[in-house]
Image (cartoon, rainbow, N blue to C red; front, side):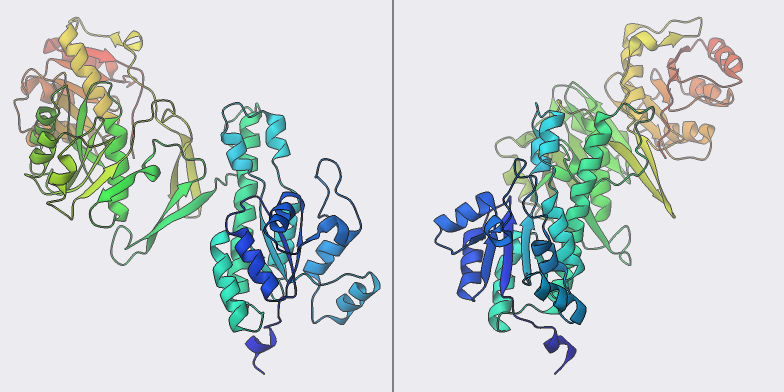
Length: 525
């Protein structure tokens, strides 16, 4: 007899106690037909009895009643002894005989709906606590630990496979399946505990918003073809309780399978597009904006965004904060684009996109109720994780400080507000030249600020003279101001804070340029 065959012991007794009751009656009926005794609790037992499945109540099995509003029902030696006992250990078997403990070979449990409880708007702390499952995780962990003999089930999607294996193996489940389900059970309870820890952390008033142990739960959405490069494997995970307005909730309406890089760029363009209250169009390539514009005529603002850098738009990702019109879709399809994301699509737009079947078309409704400031921004480093709050500061004119002799006019202030918002989404060092509702030149990711300033001029596909300039961080020297002046820049917005601020301000005054300090840096690494 092989090792695998030796481990194929038939399931004779199953404990079933679930919150998610989908497929349960059919599964329990299948167990009964295979000669399995079914033990159960409360609502689960009622459902099975009504479905005509013979079932034994846990309280009858243990001889001990449920108590304390159901807090105590499965925490009993007859339950955990039956699950944890080693079937090949004589001492364990002797203990079972002495205490009349029968083996439990299958545990089908999923946990109290803690996650849905805390998602309710008016859920109190007391209600959340009552939705913390104790007996369920304990049974699952016991079953998963003793996977050599016990099958631990948490997902109704596995019911059919288990019944099929039992029918094929004289009532037994293979060790390989039991090991896989053990891993799933520990992942299930681990996710559950992390949700509780996260929720309780949010209820405390610690000096720091960062918990001592950081373990937000994620669940896999899909395997990806590869990572940043073809030799790297990859998958896409969604954080538990991720709100409806996040990229992990976007719906793909058509197009090729999303790649690792597509998803990163889609998130970048979406976060930029939704910054604006008026209609917006943004184009991103390798997470950097190629062009942005705002206004009421969607087709025209897309053209303005595209014409900022028409070369880089090739193969870009396009985002809108309004439903895409058929006229805009027609204009988009004049270009080679990888993906489009928007809150929706008006009549005729999707029919036009269908002509280019490879274009990935994504839909993600706007969610103004849940600001981007919620949650954390995480960056993986070797051996560790950097965690920070999101950069969610918006433009506040009351915080602006004019530091030059020349005051910016109203039109220049609007242009600076626009440029400052775009610069927040450009990789450092970032320089943005713009008018009040469209980018003109973007310099991104250079190792020094003067190169970014020069690059923004070189890349500009429109007239720079008369534009404003935004910088994501202070100017360490006056050279960027001199470069801007040569191009005809009329106003500059920057954080300030350099030891050479006086020199930089003096340069602006020499060129009769208005300069505003924000006091806020927007580095994006």
